[in-house]
Amino acid sequence: MMVVLFGIGAWEGLPTPDGQISKLVDGIAARGVLKKCDALLSGYLGSAAQGGHVLSAVASIKAANPLAVYCCDPVMGHPAKGCIVPEGVQEFFREEAVPMADIICPNVLELGVLAGMDSISSVGDCIEAARSIISRGPKIVFIKHLASAGLEPNKSFEMLLVSSEEAFHVATPIVPFERPPTGVGDLTTGIFLVKLLTGASLEEALKHTAGAYFGVMVTTSKFDEYELQLIDAQDEIANPTAQFEIKNVD
Image 1 (cartoon, rainbow, N blue to C red):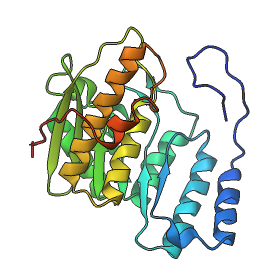
Image 2: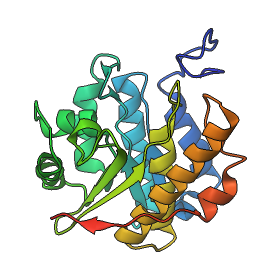
Image 3: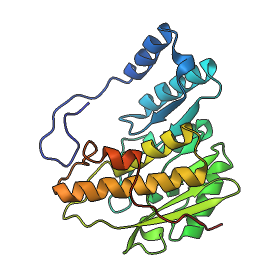
Image 4: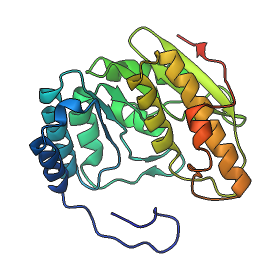
């Protein structure tokens, strides 16, 4: 655990022990409340071994509540920076997490790793890669940032939502920053999952996520901050002011 994110100067903290994840879930189970858990959302992993504990937690939660959802945010890197995860984590996400997940939320770099595709340069490529992942287990692939694979990558921040039968695209204006804030993928994945859990359709969840993302970015820009200003933008997260068109691109 760290007191600050990488890239914000000096940081302090120690790696979370691999077994800590299972210990926490065991403690929740001992209280008899796993059956009330509607979803598990996993993100960055400090080791492949941690991934095994995550999947053990998924199994425990689904045994208690068969309707629970496993949403995997396969954090591996950034399209402009490449993969930055420890050895074995890429393989874990591709070979072990994908078959267990109900929802996968990669960026375009992570999408290529999971699908085994060396080059993804268009929306069509993204849909093809997403469907190859869906054929292995997940029901939904939410590509949270298309980057250079988007329709207008220099003008818009674009997202794509793919199921076995549908593919929805949304674009928002790019909010300018001297130093783009981090944590955007965590934000969009969390909002998208919550909207699905509250009963939204795929289109509704994507529309809300795009609007909330834009509202948070505009608020963060006004404060000229590197960290997302979630508290000041909480009303935008709950009820986004901006609304963006959802297009079926399948």
